[in-house]
Image (cartoon, rainbow over all chains, first blue to last red; front, side, top):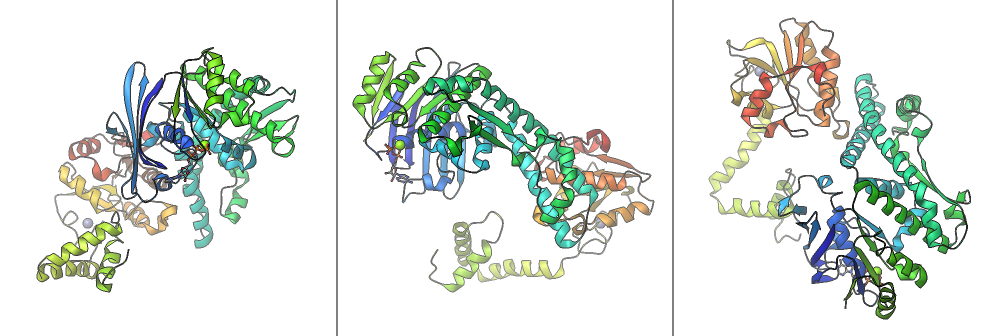
Length: 360
Length: 206
Ligand SMILES: Nc1ncnc2c1ncn2[C@@H]1O[C@H](COP(=O)(O)OP(=O)(O)OP(=O)(O)O)[C@@H](O)[C@H]1O
Ligand SMILES: [Mg+2]
Ligand SMILES: [Zn+2]
């Protein structure tokens, strides 16, 4: 699977842009602020129906305009599939495949798997647990059909349950039947989500150290672990045990919406003890492990976006990364860099087929 | 949006309180009304004032009705022993259009949804149970949409009615998961009604 071309219209700083891509490596070069990362983000839109950097679609419209359009043709199983994403301030977002509108965006996600490595990934280490759950979910959605729908259902029951607890409190009543109904629904969805997340992290952690040592010279022992209340107890018991507390706080205090991933280095949180370089390597290794796992799972290669990778790694490692394409580890790759010469030199020396696209 | 006139502004604000109507379309509608005959627009306006002041509900089934008993409840040929439970008048109208249902209705007035502020108390659920307790009904059919709210209401009603000496069924709702019943076409709705299932058999569906 690869992206053959891309058309942008009023997307961020791109008034009208057209690109044709190579099946292997594509490198966007240009000065700071010319819109290289924005192109990667547009590709991200075609895969995930949203931006990697800014979830507020309206802010991705070029200033002073009312809508943007992103269109691209993917070649998958030798078929040409045109994906279009429009966002209009009045009518909202529309995603089309071969000109046909999707009813549910969750049906689109996962058809064109993609993994991005970007400087903003550091938020995965630095921020609260929500971003790590999002990471889990968007990764799983790339290979597990129906997962996003299960998650949407879970979130909806959770919301109803929280409002119910609030209603119990405010109207001073209690209704066993409705609560039981929401509990049953939560249990049903939580168990599916839990198993899926657990198996994802377990599989990832098997190859994680290997990629960390490829990316970093150091000998630290790194690990990722899935943290969930469901590791200790089944969700049924958790909900029962926390009911009286939940009724007071009017919120559901247990469930997979409290999950987290623990990132450790030598048994300590990498957030606390990792140097900036170690944190960068950690995140790249995480994404490579994810790439490895997902390719195996789906049987073909996701697209990989490497944003500002030269700033994160020394040339030797970038070369190594790029040569992954020669080994057949990577499928189609998109790279951004500010130094044309550096980029060309590295790519030339690896003898991989590549296309340099100048942005200005 | 800046308005050259307070009058237009007021009209736009009112129109845009309608579901699905944004400020722009509200302005378009307001300007459209201004182009029409004065009489016509007055008629338009009064229809809503009349609606809200004089609306009446059937005292048997709680559907909207101009008299105390609706056309269905006052029809001697309708079978009072079969009660079809619906969310609101839209579904009742859709089922009536199929002309396949000979029983009577019970209009709940909504579905259980805490996030919309709707609890069982806000719906005509006690009234349904009372009706069943009177002993005339032999079968209650749930015709609620297969959304999470519809399913929750189904479940709730089932729990409340399961020990009564009546048959409880639900319309075959495999139709289109998550679809609102209102939009289901008449043929499918007719089939769904005739192939209803005992509730406990499809308790898991959603
Ligand atoms: N909604 C928008 N409308 C117009 N321009 C925008 C919008 N959002 C962002 N930009 C512009 O896009 C530019 C940034 O683009 P981008 O992040 O793609 O740059 P880049 O080429 O990746 O730069 P760097 O090398 O520094 O990473 C900025 O100049 C910014 O003003
Ligand atoms: Mg950039
Ligand atoms: Zn009636």
